[in-house]
Image 1 (tube, helix red, strand yellow):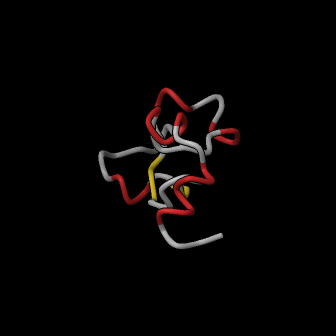
Image 2 (cartoon, rainbow, N blue to C red):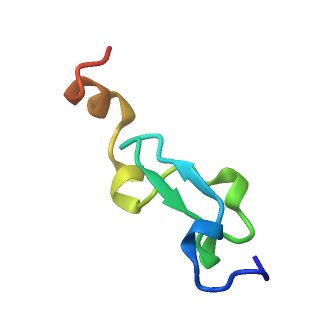
Length: 58
């Protein structure tokens, strides 16, 4: 990410597995970006199945 110019729209993004919200690349994820699946520790701790039940999915 050496070409970052302060504009978040130029950064890669993903969709969080738990909350289904988009999140952007962060410097601390530089070496493990391919393995990152969650936007936060809160989403990582929350079981995915319970979030689907809250949204009415099976």
